[in-house]
Image (cartoon, rainbow, N blue to C red; front, side):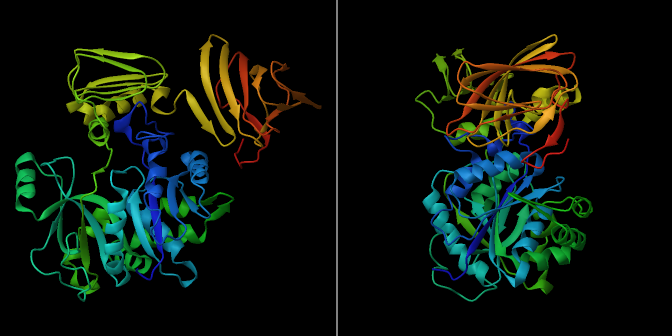
Length: 492
């Protein structure tokens, strides 16, 4: 067993626009249960269990902070760090900030940098590959994981390995075993179809998984050489970071000064040909049923299918249909005579597209966003640190919400300038602050909150509190909130 503790660095800041309408800008694909009961982020950390792990570092967008923290709590982790980016700067600054944080107080752990949105069918084989690479990383190498290609894919970048005996590090047991480390020769951009076919045929090329393992000091040395502006900005962002309970907030001004760049472009593509750094680059081959779940056709590849090649989730009825992906979140979806289609139904949007066109879903998202449509941003069901709400109905001067508050949680003490609210308790117990009054309401009891009155909703019980809220007024937007006190640090 290797000596080092392995610190996962989970990169969880992307928006996943190609998986719209399930993935939204403020509730992206890595936080969605696309492949079972847990989210892709939770699956990423689950598959690492059994390795000699330290406390994981999850790098996320601050817009996702509350739901990300809740999902980490659900995993039962003893410790973790949620590092919040004030703005997206791509993966190189994200990993650099995590490495600076991990290396504080003189520590030099081995980091396993992995995206939060990948799928692996064989977690045991993945863990075995990580252990094979860990000894290489302990001795100063940058280790990347190459996916054994099963088709000439044009949507992935490729890794080329050197032919012959591994170079650059002393020989260790297992170097000649299947799946042992090989020397990295070069990264290759996404190829055309003919080039991809050549890559697959020659046996020297692997898909680039975007998963890397290396000591914190090795990454900081490499990024300092190739992109010193990123290192300078991230050093300052971590030094001035604000500890906010569940979150470590990177300094906004310092982090904004960092150039935006990916791990591949900033360092990895340059590393194999830069001899003066003396940092060996190694590749561990992976044959573990990997998918980046980048678009709906990739999800169709990743999940189980029936005898007709259909992958379905939810209440779906198929008739004379083959090779489809169909997801029904709220109602029955029936398909008749459909071939190689994607149908995704959510509460407020439906996507229908040929499976071959799913890479272009981002075009729909960009045009909807330009048109000011809220469906690109949030689901009808919106997560909050205290629970969630679902916008059931709305019309001129009214809106109806179903609100669920976690046990022990409370909303902010607030008031509204433009709306009044009527609350009906469906289940659980509600403690309601209304002006100078404090009320305790049970099932089937209700109260009215007049416009302009300070109020707060709390759940003092042991089970979730569910209420129906009816809003009425001249303006019903979520920004009509004046907060006077908030347990979660949200500003007015």
